[in-house]
Image (cartoon, rainbow, N blue to C red; front, side):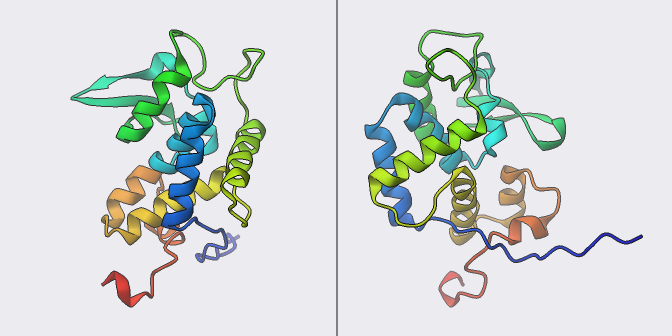
Length: 181
């Protein structure tokens, strides 16, 4: 039996540079949790499960970079360098704790993907972004922006933890644009 063929065109939307900038500013003016979460999703391209599954004890320095060890899809554990803005946003959100999740709700429980989505939507509403924005929108924005900036496909594929480059290419909304050449 053959598997059905995947549609390799993405139907998800990404934010443009202006909307992303506005979202990051709004997050920076919000709570430390909002700023850290949105920075991690938008500037590091993490999946929502990777962000919500992160623990403070897995933050650390490595070769001059602030890093975070996460569990990727499929259970693979990797250490990723944090974008400088993300690294600056994480510290106020984590406080002095060390053996707890990076993102917790008021009662100390780990933030789940539903709470993550509510936070992203709330900050997006504050910026006046009219389109539907969720955590995956920020991952999509990260991948699309990297491809638009000319980052090699292999590097974007690795950052996104995609096994197949065609999966990464699904995010390339500007594939036919003459402006990219």
